[in-house]
Amino acid sequence: MVTSPDAVDLAVIGAGTAGCALAASLRLGGWSGSLTLLEIGRGPGGRTATRRSRRDPGFALNHGAPLFNISGKPEPKLLTPLHKAGWISPFSGAICSLDGEGRLGGALSDPLSSGATWQGTPQMDHLCRGLLNLAQRNQPTPLRTNTLVRQLEPIGHGEGWILRGSDGQALLRCRWLVLSGTLLASPRCQSVFGWPEVPLQQAAARLGDPQLLQATATLGDITSTASSNLLLTLSEASAGAWRQQPWQLLQFSVAAQQRWGIRRVSQQAMASGRWGVVVESSPAFAAQHMQVFGSRSSAAQLLGAGPDPLAEAQVMQALDQAVQDALQINTAGAERQLMRWGAAFPQTPGLSTELSLCASSRIGFCGDAIAGLGFGRVEGALRSAEALADQIQELSPPSSH
Image (tube, rainbow, N blue to C red; front, side, top):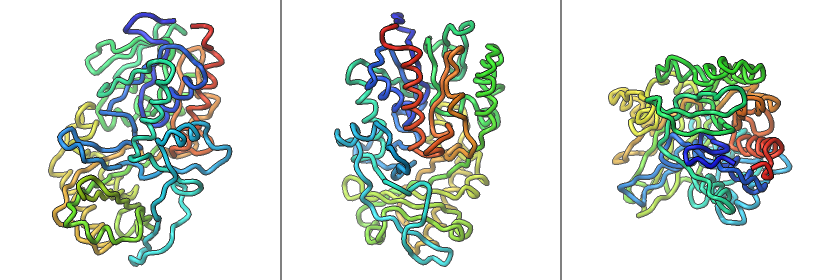
């Protein structure tokens, strides 16, 4: 077992659903090695995060995913302990649709809401908070937030990794490494953030492991659609028309997306009578504004992407006006924020499960970009994490630590 305070048996980059599910699966399976998660954001969640405010304890807005769905059987093993402990519950809100003429209808057949639907309780980030709680039951499993991993440095062949920050400082040394997202493997880190190299590509070239080189090439080729999300917070007095709507989640048909540039809208009650509305752009709208980040996003605060206040205001205004035109509901007086998900939905084929663990290089991958049931969704993140946990336990069982 690794004993240095700056070294661990396993480091997981990313505390979204996949990273947290991996930690929970390992611990529930009896894996006793030291494990640390590193997360660029202020807390766990990834796209299932909840926007919160240090200055306003009552502010909580699910700004990524309003729900998650499970479309196949058997369901992920982690659902039962999460549900039993009250971290998640069946989604209870109504789902409606809007057509290109602005008419309301029933729910559409949608990969993001078919099958059994669930929600974090009381907020979406409780999905990951619950997973971390499961991971803490038998052994401490630290989460280091506001931590940008900028470089992946292999220690010889099969000797582990050193993770370095934006200034080259050593953050952590680990025997095994898992990437639960694709940022460090994707060329978008060069085009969007101006990095001179793709960290995983650079590390794989140094190691020369054929399996890792193939996995790295596959991850680098995965394309993703983006989403520009407008977050609206309305006072109790100005939220009356929203409260009267017969839906909690509104899907936009293909024609409606083409007309208004919106994919779906969700709404949720908040403390002190306030009301939250999240307007998710269509992929086409987001593609037209790829360089526009929310000033409060991790991209702006930690990745060195300089925000453009004018462009940000224009994107928010465009989405604000579009949702008013589509729904004929006024948003006057609402507080506005912009959240841009640069890789919201990975596109097929994804990374094959055969490449999800490169044993000789001691690196693994999980997340919704892994091919299989639930690809591109929370379900895929859960299933890939559970599968990777089984592989890690086989190669590094508790008795070896």
